[in-house]
Image (cartoon, rainbow, N blue to C red; front, side):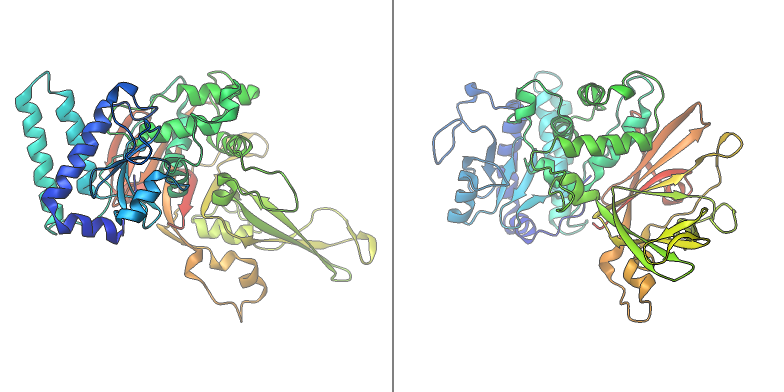
Length: 478
């Protein structure tokens, strides 16, 4: 699922000469379908880089002149050199199976391109079978291409539907989290941009489990045109090797799997650091990490002490701290989360000493991440453990300005920023009880949502998405 593309190079390329564009795309897609481009190209293909004449580890087909170049989208390469010298900014990445724009420095999507590439692979698969059926498919693809190119349909977007994930044995908790990863635009750009190449990873070459390599493989499979459900056996096996306590086919909690996976992906990133004094540059922290500010005010001398706490997600109580009532909206939960609360025991103040009878603590959000994961704590323990099934409404667009430290501390002078408004990207819902249940997900596409139940995928109405009994919601700035 790609977000709509606003790449002027791509739209101009299609509009300039549709027939020539179609021919270039056909050439690139045919190579993609016949060369096992997900990994290393077959040496028997006879194709070589137009600059160095070597067999390219990662082929890039120029969509301006059909030249083949080697390289990667994230670093200087012969593909970069060709794009600069020939001023041909668009190339088909045979490994990622997507169009990369060197002018914009990112992968770009167009509904017609996705549909045509998918049809080309079906044509090739059917060449030894029903030729009439293959021709019919290709004609349908051509009509869609012409429809979009003529401006009678949306000029950009993604035609790649969500793909289901096979249940590997009580593994729905894993499937819904993986769906949220695969839909995340920041993770997608990172892994499809070859920022973690599983073929060159030192951990994998040394026989060590690497969750980043397995997620890289899943992204390659997700954005291929093969419609069969994914079977992330290698990801699950690597997760079990890295987290022995979670190994086995017992039911697990999706939120615990989310946090464990994020931590393992962080530790398997070559750029990760655990320094307490500097932010970690790994993709996980650049995407999901934010900062909470905790301020404690002494009830005797009013001295204030502050600490900053990093977070990868927010866990929100459904019960209001003051009234004890169950919240009905996500905004109610966030308001309760950032409302001052009285500390339950005596407080030792750094300014006036021990034995302070009252003190208050207030949490606020100092910095926000690019993707905001929120857990709604439906499982609680009072006299006994039980689940809260109360529906909680959550918006398509979430304004986080009211919960920021600067807004709460200086409301009169605070100026709201549109950069603190998020779009709903994924919803994880839970049906059942504490001891037995099932997870499903709603994932946002370019123009609608998909309901995903393991390997079953269908389009979902917006009213259905917003009425789900959400356990986790994921928002993104993009």
